Length: 419
Ligand SMILES: Nc1ncnc2c1ncn2[C@@H]1O[C@H](COP(=O)(O)OP(=O)(O)OP(=O)(O)O)[C@@H](O)[C@H]1O
Ligand SMILES: [Mg+2]
Image 1 (cartoon, rainbow, N blue to C red):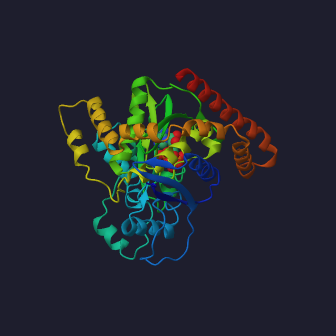
Image 2: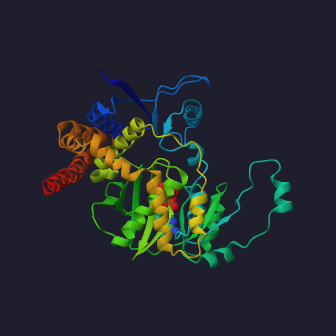
């Protein structure tokens, strides 16, 4: 009897990026038809177009990877419609992602007992643009002593918006003069004052479904040099914890494509920024880690589509996490272990890896061949040309080409040692 054939169409909702979508399309084409339980599954993707839509229009995409809705609201509303009306699977739901900015993420993980630096939210510097503001402020706003709050937080501190991203409005405040200047300049941005963490390592974890890569990040470096290729840069304990923070944040909020920034001193892991709806996956920043990231996106998408994973629309009931958090008999580590279990259940981690072994055993080798081929060199060249001025292109081509060659040779020795 002939197999049923199901074609899964994945939508890519894109801003200005060309590199990873091309890589995604290439790697998706390497997945090939998969025979699972009598059904043949094939995969294609399309870049989503933006146009007026009737709320009852059908949606052809079974799954959408969104890189745009955090700033472009027309497609954001389309995503909401697709999610509510058409059961389209979204890796990050706008219902939670746009509602749970940095501030909510701080609060929630603080409640779970994570080591979030002391953080205070202060009212707007400038009046809110609303005719009722003057009355409300005069009647209900308490006067407050900014200097006293800063003293409590301690200098140097960071002042940054409650919903930040891309360094917008972030300043390091070493003294009281800078404090007033930064607050005066914050205008209509709502600001946190946050204690500075003295750290040895800046760990940036990228989590895609059940897969996490913890990377050695150097924010003071220019973009092309921010991710160092250093394995085991954290102690085993801190490495496990960094991975766990990233997974737990995602499972708590139902996010499946997010990055977490953590400041690490010894075995202490302090999460500082972990609500990033559109994590950086450019080949010119991830380089060595780029093939892993795009493969993970393809693998997780294929897994969700073939297994019929149910999309989550809102934030799930956090009670199971809070029950652990509120248990006075558990240590910090025991709580983290318990959250990690919940996260692994949420992302079906064991089942996922078994599924990949059964149905996608060919993929890593094919991706390796592709990254080692002229087609990938072309992608890299086009990206470098689009990103850097002409006189720097040769240098950057050599830089990224070298890092990706290193990835290829590391993968070859790894698979040789596993044989
Ligand atoms: N509490 C802190 N202690 C030490 N450094 C901090 C702290 N908060 C922020 N920083 C520094 O400031 C940078 C920007 O802060 P943050 O990540 O919170 O803002 P952002 O707008 O999300 O920036 P980005 O988009 O670069 O991640 C961090 O990468 C880190 O170097
Ligand atoms: Mg950040």
